[in-house]
Figure 1 (tube, rainbow, N blue to C red):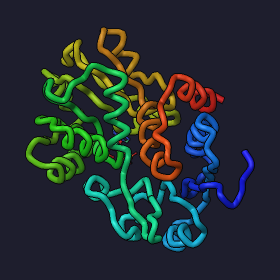
Figure 2 (cartoon, rainbow, N blue to C red):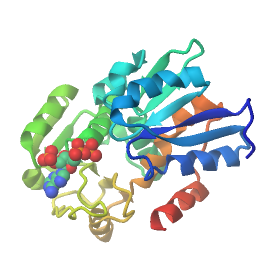
Figure 3 (spheres, rainbow, N blue to C red):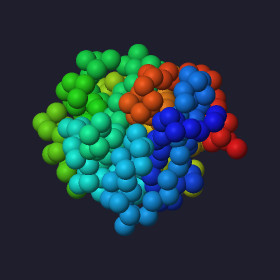
Figure 4 (cartoon, protein in one colour):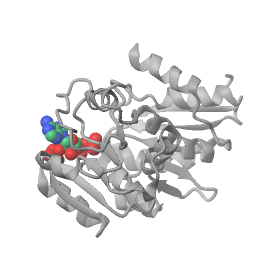
Length: 281
Ligand code: ATR
């Protein structure tokens, strides 16, 4: 599409940035909705993040997504940060306001819940949820579950201290245990979410027995490369409903796109296939 002085511009800052699928994703929506807009990858070294973010209003740019390693540093740079981003400890979406100030938010929690809602029958009030992992991704998932009123969240992690710290941050509905105690923790659960990096391309597989997990429980792996992880394969084989991680990536992009380009975008099968083709290329 032709770029002019009226073209709305947004992008994604990271270091490195070449791996990011966000330009493909937002580019798809820009074409789909015929918007005079452009979404660009910005390679920004960590030391330059503040200058780069402050340059957005000066350059007339509508905002930016943030990816590794900028999400935490942005908390201190934005002029305001919403409650969810503070609790997660990371900003992934920055909106330039009319007055040139920067509003930071975190849309990973939104993306996680929207994906689950659209791909499964899981219902918040059903019962206990087990979360595997206690890193940045786990923080977003636990924040989403707490915000949605889940009353029992069992956080399992290789390193117990990290699980305990995460549980303490998110309050009395959370408890912590070691990953090796999964047998007990999975009993009676209605949802199991893997947020660890295990199972990702280049990482060891997640080798977890889910024998004690009820067969009606939904199993969600937020890993999306590969789409079908070992966990999802095993879960599907024993009859559990499964949800892969690609939808979270797609849904988390919606609020930023809507704010920068003025259209509420839809996550469709065709969008999913476009991103999948790129992941498999
Ligand atoms: P992210 O921000 O993507 O969540 P992270 O903060 O590095 O990444 O967290 C990675 C998660 O995967 C952690 O829960 C980590 O467990 P530890 O806290 O014990 O490190 C988990 N993880 C990574 N490699 C693992 C392994 N080989 N076995 C078990 N858990 C692992």
